[in-house]
Structures are given as C-alpha cells and as structure tokens.
Image (cartoon, rainbow, N blue to C red; front, side, top):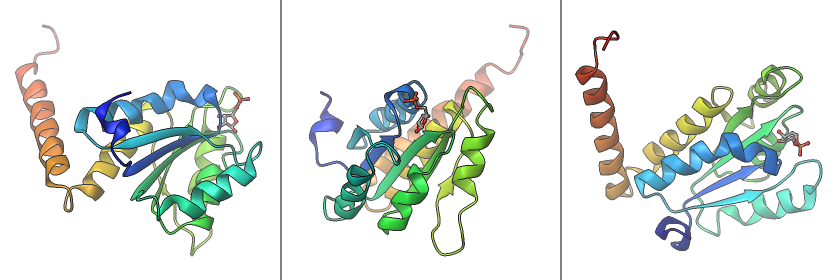
Length: 168
Ligand code: RP5
C-alpha cells in the first residue's frame, strides 16, 4: 500500500465493476504521481446500490473532497452518487464493448439541472484528466499538490518542446 493510500483519502475513485479498473487505473496512477491521498473501490449502482448510498452518505464526513466515478454502459454510478452527496463527482465514461462508450458518455453527461456531474472523455484520457482535475480542485488548500501539478505541467510542456520533430 502506498503512502497516498495510507493517509486519509481526499479523493475517492469508484467504479461499477472490477472490469473498469483497466481504465480507472489511469486516474489512480495520476493521483499517485501527484501525491494525492486517495482510495479505490468497486461500487456498483445496480449490483450494490446500498453500498453506493452508504459511500455517498459518508463521503463528506470521511474527508473526501472529490469522487471520481467510472462506469460503462448504463452508467448510473456518477449520477446516483451526485444525487446523494454534495461532494463534487467527476464522471468517467468507460469504453463499453457494444457501443464504444457512447452509451456511457450519454448516461453520465445528460444529467437533469440541479444534480451536476463533471463529465470527462471516454476511456483512459478521461480517467487521467479526472484525476488532474481533482488535483487542481485541491491545489489551493494543499500547496504540495499544487506544486506537484505545476511541476507535471512544466515537464509535459518541456517534453513536447524537446521532441518537436516527429521524424526523430
Ligand atoms: C457497468 O457495467 C460497469 O461500470 C462496467 O463498465 C459494465 C460491465 O460490467 P461487468 O459486466 O464487466 O462487470 O456497471
């Protein structure tokens, strides 16, 4: 277990199935790299709805400041979490086999007014960006996270500038 996982988690990463981990591991990896304390759980809107309600009901009191929720297909997990907690929910549409994730995307993004879910890109990019977004949300109150995020952005820019000839 990493240091980020033993400290009180600030971000919860949840997913509808173990099969979503292949995608959601990209969120965990980014939080890990930025030193953001986090936890990872399988919480299914359909198969374990009572766990979902409990997770949402206790999230704020447990210190979670953002929940990254990934799900595929009839992807109700992010929306239902948002319905039960005021902790910001960042939704990641997992790329489904049948419809390539368009079902997941539309299930997550088309929330009724009043219950917002921040919705990210389908698949790995969405998972990575949800983590970076969560880190940005935390940066003001947690300067070390802000500095890590700043350093990551600088490295990313430097990498592109140092490799700007695609033939090499
Ligand atoms: C959703 O159903 C999960 O988020 C997953 O993306 C999808 C398929 O789940 P499994 O059948 O692989 O467990 O609830």
